[in-house]
Image (cartoon, rainbow, N blue to C red; front, side):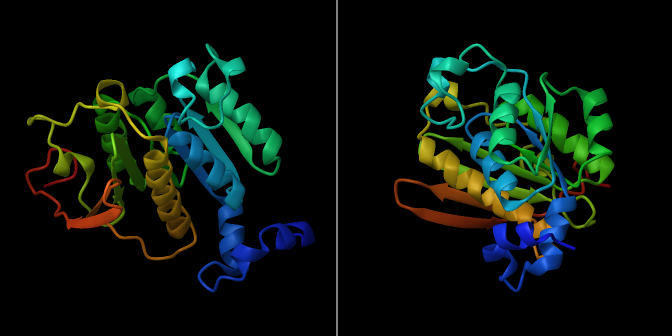
Length: 248
């Protein structure tokens, strides 16, 4: 059961018929890994903690730079040269004391993926590195952990939900096979507008909350944002039988 304080704090969520008290309890019991605590990971971690997610794992081996500040809204100039996951955890813990936060202040490798994916209910890929995307995609498929991918460059954003527990779910490798030329552009190469990241991270967070509370989540659907025209478009994907990660 929820305490009186929890009922008051999360009352606006609890009154939603798709959430209710049981949904709020599910959020409290949930464990979420956020891979990358930058432009996507900042707002995603804030909204998940604010929603009452009980445990967050924050993974990032990078340090904060001056050029991060216009879009990585948890950080200030006083945080420069400190690890992103460490700083984010400290600030989130101060604002959301009910959420348990564990820091992984290094880049994930397969060994770390295998260790942490045994502990979590869902992963948010908020990274900006194609090799990291391939790594976490394969690990989530192997461990059958849902993966919510976000990406953004310039005025454009993408979001994709992968649920390996569903045999029909395509994976990231189905969309961008490693044997072909995968998109290598990121914020460092072509720039980014901060609000685009907030919109994509908001979509990632919404998908995570729906998944954790037992609401339908759209798989095999690539959501693409055009920030200049204020339009979202949806494209249907199919699981590729030839995919070396999830096919066969």
